[in-house]
Length: 173
Image (cartoon, rainbow, N blue to C red; front, top):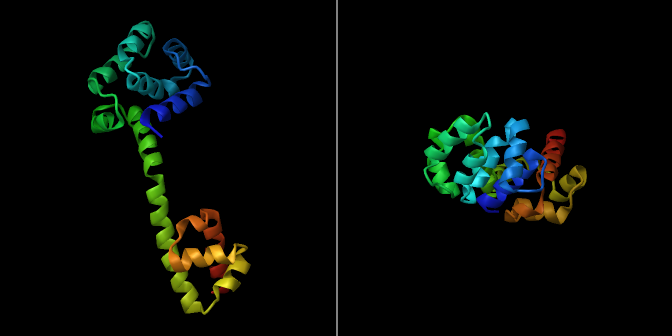
C-alpha cells in the first residue's frame, strides 16, 4: 500500500464518494469538514496542490489549506510530509499517523504475538498442561498451537485464537 493509495481510499471513505476528481472532493469537504485533511493530502500527493487551492479559493477552509500547502512546501511523499508533521495542525498529523500505523501494523503484531507466545510457553511448562489438551480447551487446532508455541510461527494463530488460549490457560492454571 502506497501513501497515495492510502490517501485515495481514506478520502473516498470520508467523503462518501468514489470519484477522486478535485472538484468533487472539494465540494464534499464543504459539508464534511472531517474529510478536509485527507482530501488535501491526497491532492498534494497527486501534485495538485495549486489546483486544489484555486478550486477552494471561495471555501471557508481555504486559508487553512493555503497555510498547510505552504508548510508542506512541495512535499508529496509520506517521508517528506512526516518530517513536517510537527509544523502542521494536529488534525493533519492524524492522517499521517493513520498511514504510519498501517505500515507498521505487521511488525507490531509480531512483537505482540512473540511476547504472548513466551508467556504461554512458560505457563504451559509450569502448569504441566499438554498443548493438545490446551488446544482442545481453547478450541484451536493443535498443530497450529504447537507451531505457534514451539516454532514461533506467528501466522498460525490469529489474535482471537491467542486470546482463547490465554483464557483457557487462566481457567486451567
